[in-house]
Image 1 (cartoon, rainbow, N blue to C red):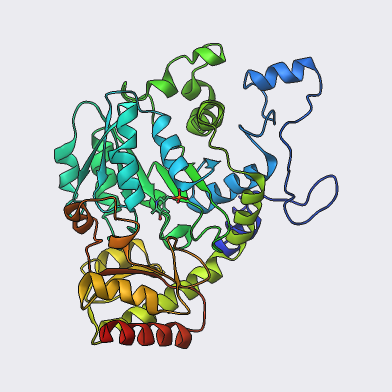
Image 2 (image 1 turned 90 degrees about the vertical axis):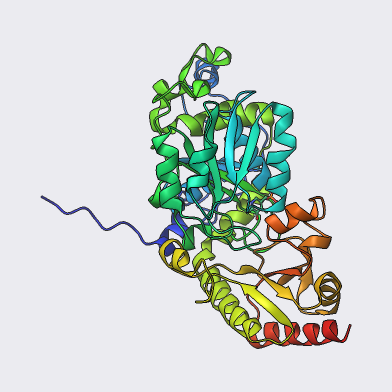
Length: 432
Ligand SMILES: *Cc1c(COP(=O)(O)O)cnc(C)c1O
């Protein structure tokens, strides 16, 4: 029997998955299909497209050839079956929950999440009647204790922004699956180069592609990846995928599309009705960014490790929360789930609290003071005065964004310049 050819490596897939030379022009780089709509062959072709009987393009709110390449690329890198690219990371979270939540339903999330996600889940989702219960993810049993009959999913970040908390993905997946719940992992901070949540039981992976996937701080975007392994019919919780959909002649997504049910639903219902479509130019920029993801992540991680080790010894620094440091309580989880390094975003405590944190962000020169992460450039922010200022002080501390906390996103500049800038900034902050 002929042996199966070896699967292409991650670096190869990051450059080639989902893309081929343009069949009409031979263009090697994926074209930006800057079009709103697509001509039908004839009336029958149009009818079968609208009935979801033929795969093809109708209108760019639903699907677009440039965006499709990105979807296939990210699905492949995450080891998933299909994906839906959307306008931002928050749109990805909205679309993921929209595909199965009903008013009165509940999901459980880690309380260590990106500040914007805590607000989205805790406040805006309430307007849809979706209730999010936050628990401390350090003890996975907290998720089991919070499960109610209306609970449908568990949501965590593989590597949390900004606290760098790493959760026990495998154990939380078991708890979710024992209760027939969907396990959703935000893999933004790790990227699929560093962490593959689906290997550990994630059913859906969501990304803010705005960060490391696009990688250059120039394109907003998000993506929902479906593993294709979740049995939507195992209980009566996921009716929008198992019951007839009136808008498509009573088609049942799971029965009709099987392991692509959520991917098709996400385009045919989610993007159709929420409209949070990714622009083709942003898809192009993100595809281009992903081609160098492995190289960039290696350097991001190496630079971050060096900065974390330097700050750990720095007299103006009271603590450093980087799982790549052996002193971190997440070091063992990092070795299991993030074998290529603990990412490049982390926090540290500056001696002198709120005032020193504000003074530091004013004093740095190479670092940009802004609300983003995962750029080629090194970035700095003081969460308590910016991203987390909407939260109460208790919520700030619970989210790892107390008054003395400074968040860094270590970029790809020369390491001596990165460390030199932090040193001069900390010296100025200490002088007050
Ligand atoms: C930035 C971010 C989001 C939100 O993504 P946007 O693209 O800004 O909408 C969600 N989760 C994490 C972990 C993030 O860092």
